[in-house]
Image 1 (cartoon, one colour):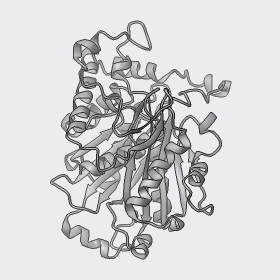
Image 2 (image 1 turned 30 degrees about the vertical axis):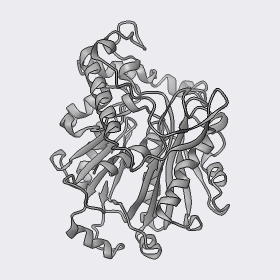
Image 3 (image 1 turned 120 degrees about the vertical axis):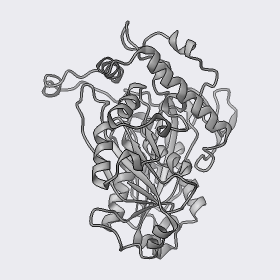
Image 4 (image 1 turned 90 degrees about the horizontal axis):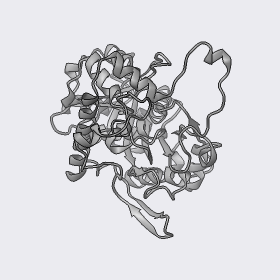
Amino acid sequence: MLELAVPLGDRHTATVTQGYGTGNALRRLTPQRRSTLTRLDGAVSPREMNAYIIDACRTPRGRRGGGLAGVHPIDLCTVPMHAIVARTGVDPTRIDDAIIGCVTETGEQGACVARAAVLAAGWPIEIPGVSLNRFCGSGQTAVNLAAQGAASGAYDLVYAGGVESMSRCPMGSDMGPLPPSLTERYNLVPQGISAEMIAERWHYSREQLDGFALESQRRAWRAIQERRFEKSLVPVANAPQADGSQKTVEVDEHPRPQTTLEGLMALKPSFKADGKVHAGNSSGIVDGAGGVLIASGRGVEELGLTPRARIVDTVIVGSEPVIMLTGPIPATEKILRRTGMTIADVDLVEINEAFAPVPMITMQEVGIPHEKVNVNGGAIALGHPLGATGAMLIGTLLDEL
């Protein structure tokens, strides 16, 4: 759970969940509650964490083969790193660690992307780095681990985020054969088949899935037109292009404002001949990076930082590995139990749109009105840079609150 330290507007609380069962919640502080920040290492319940978000930012999402395809993923990762330092004025020598989520850790994303990015960014060589893979929850897990480290006193200032160049390191290119000890126990299937299983089990029609996808496109395009992403969005300058030129990539490339329900209904199923899931109601394949700077209470006081949010709690759960995409349901239920909240207390919810059935079942099973969910669109419209999405979603909600 993230407790906002800046009172903005009328919205107070939000949650972030992803298909592999990672979860956070965000709560805005009232002016009265904000006064507790004068003593950052006290005045919290035993369950609450003392970890603070100082800032969050992200690159645009570049379409596969698009404006960011010519950018090496390590260089892409450094864009929010540079921006975080410039925006907050922190001295990089005070950063204790860099934790970076990355799913396809092979080729240019192999070895340790986090440590390589620290060095490529020109940060002090004394700053270590660790890369992690929790599939679609990687970037969010990086933030959670950073928060836990700050709350425990292991870190005073830590950078967390994620990166994925799906143009340069194709999804699945890091895979090899699985052992019989796993395959004989579980009939593992591709995620698209899991999405089809959800649609069948919850009796969603093709028109319902496509209607959700259309609304994602509509909300994302409205958010772009209203410049609702600009607080966190950091342009990527001098991005090499296929024709040998360079350009600055400033906006998300994946949204398709011309999308219609009729056009979506005409698309062929992607995973089974009589299926309902296709490219138009699945997340987009894109490139991007996001970052979050987190401090302990001691770090905030010593460095004179102004927090945007306090991280109060985080959760992670496992879910059934064949249907696999139901994780947001138990993750949301767990974070609500642990924080003593109900959905009625929550103003905004961000659920990663890996496939349309994923947020749809979460809304149905947890009882979340659609008007609270992904109010500025989601991955169907904007794209899902696997290792980066979790960190990006946190910044999106901070900005909207």
